[in-house]
Length: 272
Ligand SMILES: NC(=O)c1ccc[n+]([C@@H]2O[C@H](COP(=O)([O-])OP(=O)(O)OC[C@H]3O[C@@H](n4cnc5c(N)ncnc54)[C@H](OP(=O)(O)O)[C@@H]3O)[C@@H](O)[C@H]2O)c1
Image (cartoon, rainbow, N blue to C red; front, side, top):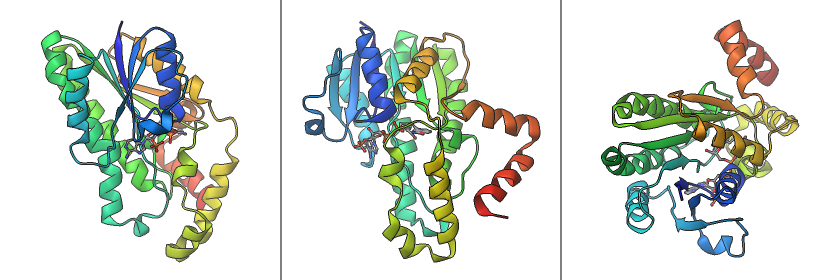
């Protein structure tokens, strides 16, 4: 059976992706921060849980070693787990920035690199980095999170070049808006909005309202099917905008020009 690692299967896109591949007969190694929380979850197939908290330095490399030792050489790695931080850049502490870069960039890259020697020896492998529409453009008050996704885009493109000669493919899947708990987990509550962000409060509240008003979000199951399509695409294509709004917004920036689109949204979001 083919073997796939999916990080962050406790909810959302990762969970739907793990379930989809498991139902289709793959062996899935899914990572969670707390295995006990997932007790009793019905996966619909062979999903083996491994604990990993990517906020811990070295967690990516340690996970790669554990997977190789206990499950064998995976065919595919889906770097899906990520944290979201909402708020103005001015409010973000260096420690918060460091932590989100660790979770979203440093450890996922280390995990992939930990698998490269085994893939190189075998002559094949596939890394799917789940980046974001926010890895192609930046939304106000999502800048820190979006910066991590831009960084992961950069690593993906660099890895695409460097690993191709070894038969290792790299893909960046860029979701638009998907109905998952990620925004609820990250949005600082009303109290936080009022605490540290006085000069930004009004625009932040407008952004929260805008975010809440987004209709037609893609379901995690549909996003998972698009990830599966990327996995099965044997071409060397790097970028896959998926889910609601990703393709039209990326196309708009290309065809109308970056500044036109930025000014349009700035007026809408920031009121001037
Ligand atoms: N939903 C969207 O609209 C959207 C848009 C663009 C990109 N994305 C990307 O899609 C991917 C999946 O997100 P989602 O929307 O499905 O959100 P989600 O439901 O919150 O899933 C995120 C997963 O990452 C895990 N995670 C968070 N912090 C972690 C840490 N320190 N160590 C290990 N795992 C950690 C979460 O585990 P816990 O349950 O323990 O927190 C969860 O399993 C992410 O890369 C996200 O950036 C989502």
